[in-house]
Amino acid sequence: MEETAEKVYRDNGSSTSEDGVNEPVFERPTGFKGVYCHPLTQVIMLGFVCFMCPGLFNALNGLGAGGQVDSTTSANANTALYSTFAAGAFFSGSVTNKIGARLSLLLGSTGYALYIGSFLAMNIHPGAGAFVIAAGVVLGFCAGLLWTAQGSLMLAYPTEDQKGKFIGVFWAIFNLGAVVGASVSLGQNFHSKANSVGNGTYIGFLVLTLIGVTIPLLMVNPNKMIRTDGTKVTAPRHPSWKVEIWGLWLTLRTDPLILLLFPMFFASNWFYTWQFNEYNNALFNIRARSLNNLVYWMAQILGSVSIGFLLDQHSITRRRRAFAGWTILLGMVFVVHVWAYFYQKGYTRQSIPPDAEKMDIFDHGYVAKLWLYIFCGLLDAMWQTTAYWLMGAMSNDPGKLAHFTGFYKSLQSAGGAGVWRADAVKVPFMNVFLSTWTLLVAGLVFTLPMIFMRVTNHTEYLDETLARMDDWGRVQAIDDAEKREMRRGRSNH
Image (cartoon, one colour):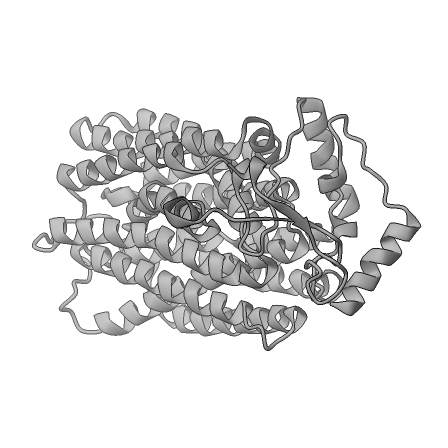
């Protein structure tokens, strides 16, 4: 299709590309094919993969204890999951670049079906806790592939001035999966005052997840994708594992400021343990937990779209948008955690045993606690969207973005493994809460100098080291004349 499309070249005038370099421009397909192959359509399909798989996983986790009474099994399963996720995701960028994003999405999504099925098995056979933990191990490796492929495509398909929009659209659809899952759970459990969910909830989740596994088979090959400005998305074509591992090292060596985002990455899943288990599961019965879960993921949609809208404002330079996003995150972190502190200081693990009668939706004080959970959802979506946007501001190359996303998911999962293990061994609620607050602030402190030194108003082709790497791992040099021409194009632009 696109291989035979008409190809022209831009000059160095007002039509110069975002990189300031003469790029080939391809004619986009028209009609139904044009709509189907549109970058936004493909990102929407990508969103539905995550809607059906990690979205429903989040809905299940958001119930607290995976919908069970005792949180120990789910906490241990999450520890196993995030441990293998952390180990596998660091190298999953290399795997994704080697086997392709669509196959990575297909393999990655199957792990979510297995994991959700394991909770159904434990509901039927209470002694199946070991199976749940084993499913968590498998899902960890699968999730690394899915999220790395997702991140590289979501950040590579849009032009530079569309990245906030594409991230916001993806995140809204992805979290809609959790909204649907939470709605199923709420419908199943609305008349229940028990502390665990029934088989019907797990069966509904499993059917939807299996549908999600098939979506990557219908997506367009990334090699055939053309952006809205006519530039082609060139997927990595590195034929050997050795070259891919070398590309991983090269990414760190040539763009070391990505290290300053590592604390932000590490903190980005840490807060789930306190929110889901130490707050939602500890204080509320299953009906209230289900309603809390629903509004939490609805708030995520609002949070992702709103921050994405800000980060794409064309009237503001990209650097100023980066600082604005950072400031909003800092404010949200303190609003949420100062508010939550006044609740957390009022209860401990010992004061709320698993068989205690917990808060229902009609009890006094419930509405205020529900609003706190809504703000927790807003903060989560804003944090994740901004993290992705910052990575997208550093590169437009899908190969490099696959490595960045792999770093992100690896560090994120390492943090998740640590805090879920802390929950499994019954670390005091207040300790988990204070560690959450501290890590979020630390993540923002380290991110600020990275924004100062690395985020520019446009991504330069000179920085796209992996895009210039050949099949043998050699980075093609740019001679001085070409560099001057690129800079001239940038000034004219």
